[in-house]
Image 1: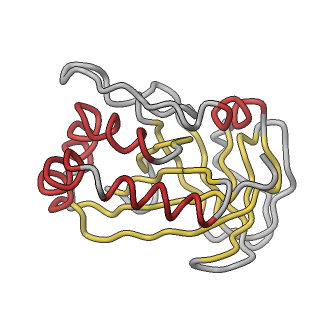
Image 2: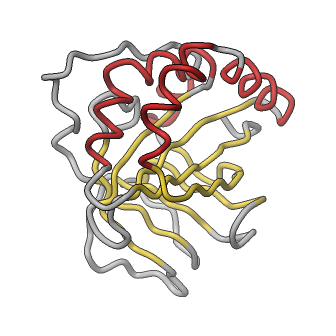
Length: 193
């Protein structure tokens, strides 16, 4: 796990459109994208900036990332099907590349399955898992057993900053220099919940 490059992508959607985007992804888009890209997690913001989706991917190298993304863009079902239906709902995107600082057994299990495609779900399937997680951005955070993963940003906004995803939803985080603390809800299809 230590040598992988992790990509944390954030999508800003039009107000109120995150569930529609997720439903479109769930009914077919996730099966397409996960055939090509190694998915670890997918979450929707519950606090902080609303109508934001975060997703986490893991690559062996920048070359693998480029090849995976090229294969996805060559998939007609993605380009001619999902993109025209779902991307008009987006208002912005952000990506950061990271290295793992601390990982959990849950992250290790998701990483081991990262190249397994996620199946599409029926339109009446739940969109979200019932759990909440915490996303802490910036500052220094001491690794804890509640952490799912802690990363250090190597490219993108605020290089050197920490991104921590934790199973604990503490509303008071003892962390010096914390930029953001957000509650996130895993999508039902997310390998990391």
